[in-house]
Length: 203
Image 1 (cartoon, one colour):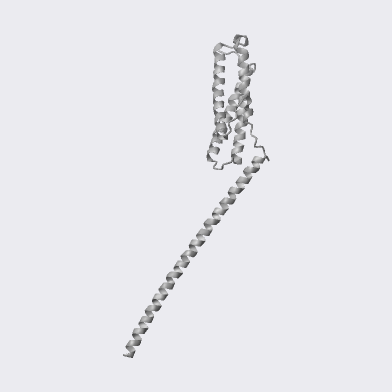
Image 2 (tube, rainbow, N blue to C red):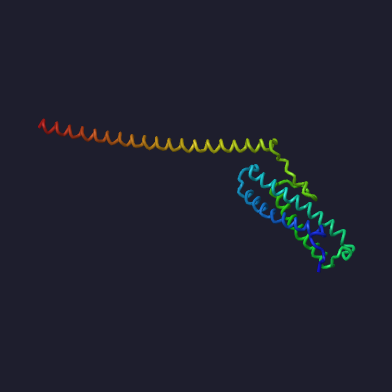
């Protein structure tokens, strides 16, 4: 049974921060994966970049706090009784750090996969700093790509409208041709009737 409290045990204070940050990171991770799965553009969209930045920042904060907790554990493991701790409590803390650390590592690895950039992560999450700052050349590329996609969409719509017009004109032309043939047939029939009538009158 542990005798320390949050007020006199820095570990418990940081532990509370870690659990709080983890509760914020999980939905950020889920949201990022959802946005990534819905993104069809070959380049990251502004929404995806924003979600990635939020997740990266949150993972970095978690990595920093976990590093502090590991340092704290290292300091007390040699003589936990000196700090008023039982062996069971130290084991619980080590297990908690390992579990959260494993979850954070899984999220960071998944983030790395979606980024398609095989950089080696390190403590503090510095390897995950995004270079896509506002106004960077990459942002300009994304904006240009977005504008290009919009133009392609407009051209596609115009092509569809032209196809519809051509189809309508084709139908009208076909109807006119049909009417022309019908008139020719009717004219021929009238000529035949007139010929027969003339013969009868001549007889």
